[in-house]
Image 1 (spheres, rainbow over the protein chains, first blue to last red):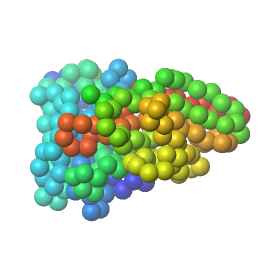
Image 2 (cartoon, rainbow over the protein chains, first blue to last red):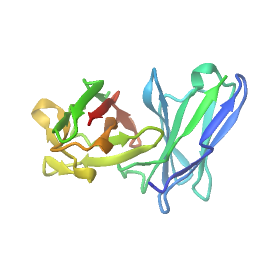
Image 3 (spheres, rainbow over the protein chains, first blue to last red):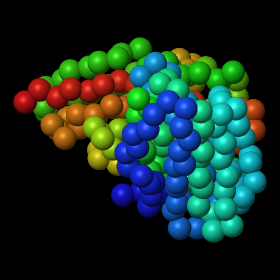
Image 4 (cartoon, each protein chain N blue to C red):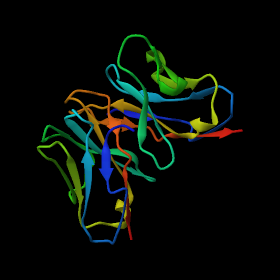
Amino acid sequence: DSGVTQTPKHLITATGQRVTLRCSPRSGDLSVYWYQQSLDQGLQFLIQYYNGEERAKGNILERFSAQQFPDLHSELNLSSLELGDSALYFCASSSGPNSYEQYFGPGTRLTVT
Amino acid sequence: AQSVTQPDIHITVSEGASLELRCNYSYGATPYLFWYVQSPGQGLQLLLKYFSGDTLVQGIKGFEAEFKRSQSSFNLRKPSVHWSDAAEYFCAVVGTGGGNKLTFGTGTQLKVEL
């Protein structure tokens, strides 16, 4: 158990809908990262937050957005969902802005039908 | 831009045999390298990391990896594989461009024959 929690574990929704994935980092960690794992793209970095501020952005679609709240939990919002958004979404956390060890949560499996 | 190559998509070994999983990276500066393991239905667990210093690093579960700058490699090894090691293994490097995002290889699926 990494100490990173993600909810829900599974999510099934229809095209065009909007969903929110939630992540709580390890106790004391200030950085949160979101990754997407799909069969065709592999593991891709989406976005990083540090202490509430966006720090780095990867290949995140405009339909996706994220935020980190004062209690350090983070949410990833996915809207206008398409079939291709079906994937495993991981959250990871690390202690500081330049801390390189990332600890991953169990993931949320999103299925878009 | 940085990249990671894991040339072997699938590897099958017998229980008790030794294991080596290959990883090659492309990165301009001294890389920060990682190996993660993903068991079915699970998240990624950090096995070991290399930042600097001794090029042979020890990790959890009896794994080790050797950093070879001349070959741009960071291969994962285990002297004797257990059936519970069957999983997917990912090599990763910390990328450039701000923040410390991980760039992952495509993974190697390990099957262990009893």
